[in-house]
Length: 253
Image (cartoon, rainbow, N blue to C red; front, side):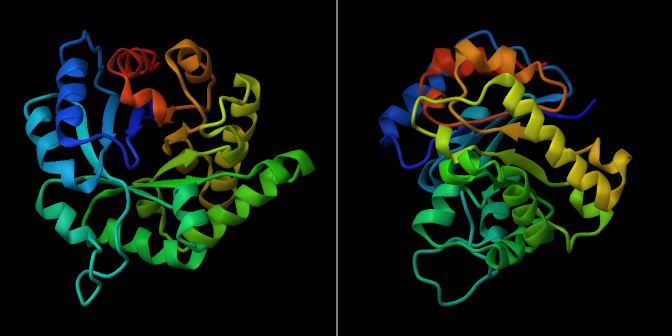
């Protein structure tokens, strides 16, 4: 079975005391992770040591970075390279989040370099893709997302693409309270899988975990995750509430 993943994206939130309290509260709750399930915490870089310490000895729980620079080192003040994250035990790095694309002008071409950098350190890229409201309303979301995937991932070999986790983000449903229906989520997740199947073959496509990233909450997680091509979620606001994110983890199929 494909890996089923509940990934928390804390974004730029919480001070250190709040971060520690959240992790303590979450880890005190009953969490059920089977062998094929993972909980991933994409915390602000400054809290990676804290989160790593808290998750030490926990099975199938990992700390992730929210971004990385495309170069391994150099005169890039304020940036953090993928090998630096690897050196402190980070195994997953989120790339191409819609906020990075919008606010920091990250292009498909830049993401090629970042994907390569993460794979070079034997870590897992969590590659984000998804459409804004205007594209959804025009009914061209499939072509839009397909272009993002082809431009940034189709240079990879078959053994590399299976190391990538996809996070589909309907941008119109992030932080707006709107959520794609479970049927809408399944429809585009199935389409994304078909894009990979066309390039790499169905057996390879069936190995790729595709997460839904649009206002997942405890109340809707089980229904969304029950869809055959939805393999979990990349969770924003709800991951900042211990009881909410615990319920989302326990909703994995």
